[in-house]
Length: 68
Length: 68
Image 1 (cartoon, helix red, strand yellow):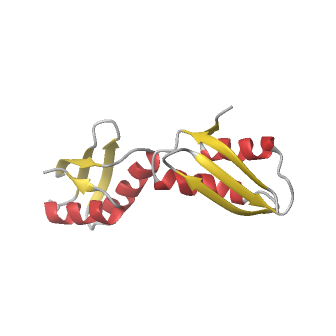
Image 2: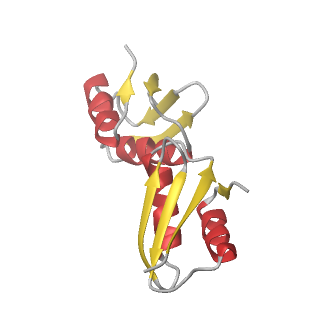
């Protein structure tokens, strides 16, 4: 099962974490989203590889950014 | 129309502001809640005076604290 990790900037609290989890969770094939608020690390498990651009779009929708 | 201002600590983002507004807004007689995230200042307008303990309870429910 593919797993990928991104760094998301701008999250400050549990609400921010929930927003990011919700938006990434809407992507087809995503089975789990784990967020470490302290580091901004977001780990995405999925049934098939997810395009990084789809992750970035979901994070943007939540109001945050993927660090490049 | 009574208006009172409190300082709420622990809010870090717009989601936190929304949570505090929602919980205080549930109190009978409250007509508007204004929050300044930068300073933590929360201004509550109401049709009748609201007990400070009711405000503190609502803020606590949202997950934050009124500074004393």
